Length: 100
Image (tube, rainbow, N blue to C red):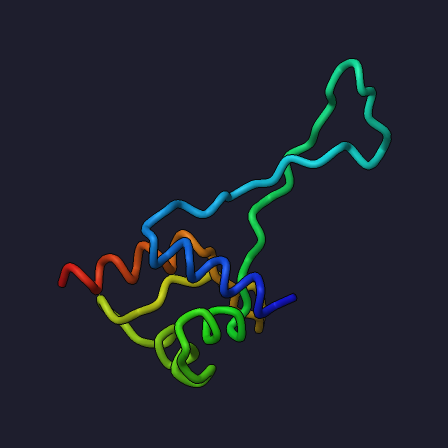
């Protein structure tokens, strides 16, 4: 499952398409088919492992890039001891490096 998600994400990056940031699902509390009730789920955050697989680099490389300063710093979110990434931030960072 993890590999499938990363491969699909990588395809979006290579093709230059925007990855969907939210998904529409039926309301789990019970939806009224006539009203078409839906809820929006938030964007899934990526782990260090996900980003490492996506970029085909070791996890240690990802951790190093979160500690650096300047243009080489990989954008991330810190939640206590956990590091998470938004796919759109990683894509934007790669685009910035490509232009530099």
